[in-house]
Image (cartoon, rainbow, N blue to C red):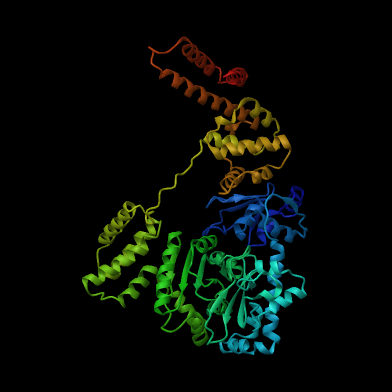
Length: 616
């Protein structure tokens, strides 16, 4: 059975997590009387559009539209699910989580986090103290990584033994199954499961603890220290309940807040490159775990950055990886620059030889992905020949086609045209031809993704919601809507969900935000919409009436809309086929519509209509 958090505990966490204090602990907020605002951490802006309502304990950004309660903020900012946000806020508030048994099953993740943290200490202590770790210490000295960096990044050493972790686990009361689930040991082929039939995954390797975005150790990457070792240079933890290498970025736990501030990340190839960057003051550097950048990696970074600088090795493999990775980032709408290092250099070696200022100059000179690709391919093709230019242009347009942004594509095409000495219109024609061929071949078009349908709710439905979110202050609104307005009359699904949540809050005496959280809202649209209408009701809301009279007015309007549509449908029935009953219904609707201008008369008509609806 999986553990869930009791609602009483959630309410305790909410009560002790003032949203202004929580958000203010992440970045600076500006207080002016009852108003609290800040630069939005979720999109780039110069003027604050991120507002916090201390009374209602919600936030909303009028720039990008994100909004919700304190749990939603932590989920967005920390990049965690709801339970992850609960744990972060509980720890901050000093609340011990009381878990209850719920449906589902799975491994004890708390145990796995604890196990990984303790093994990282085992490896770190081995690096500092064991005689057999001399080779690892010599390697780090050769790479000019001082003790302060070793301690800061908690580097370690996996002893050159088959049972170092196995023996430690037994001494510390961890079972074989737990250590195997963590990916720290392997089972010998064809064995039945006794302790002697397992062996350590990492042996005689320099160990890099891999942390999640909250700084918890979830896996390891081990570099071989034996140049004659025929195994892989780097070995990562396998996929486990905590670790999935396609979704983890090395040092993101350190870098993400700095990335949010400047909205740009430095992308390196290896852990030591990242460590060197951070130690030199380039604290937005991250790297993948020995694998190509995936859509999951890009999706994670997109929460924090609008652009990236690729800082890959200068050899052919590094150049090809940079071009390939640029396309992946562009697919998500990020701006991409590529910093070209001198031949034979990587970020680690360059900073060691030339210092941080020279590295900063390299970053400042970083070029667009298109310019970098043209420069690279011009060294491989005869750029002076017709066929050479055609080949380069085709490769560049393939990269540009990844972008879903028309402005970005146009800018890159213009730059490519200038670099290649051809008309931009010619490249645009080829780009359209490529997109058409891709569609015709049945593949999904990356350059022209299907348009996203924008949802615009009817203004009267939005304004009704603006009143109903205040249902705790005006409880009579609940009986008014339940008695006179069928939910089906609210056409917009988000508005309908808000109305239903407000009614549930009034019936159960629950907090409105709590009811919203219980709704199925994986997109976050419901919470964001609810936060917006609470923070900034429309200027026409209520038509200068009090909430009760305004809601009565909207109910009359919804019924007018409903009855007019029914009458229009009846009018379309040919006279030759119409019976007496539809004629009478059409007459009754007309009489009813004339009575829907005032509540006293309209309420009686509505009651009759609702009784008729029950009989059908």
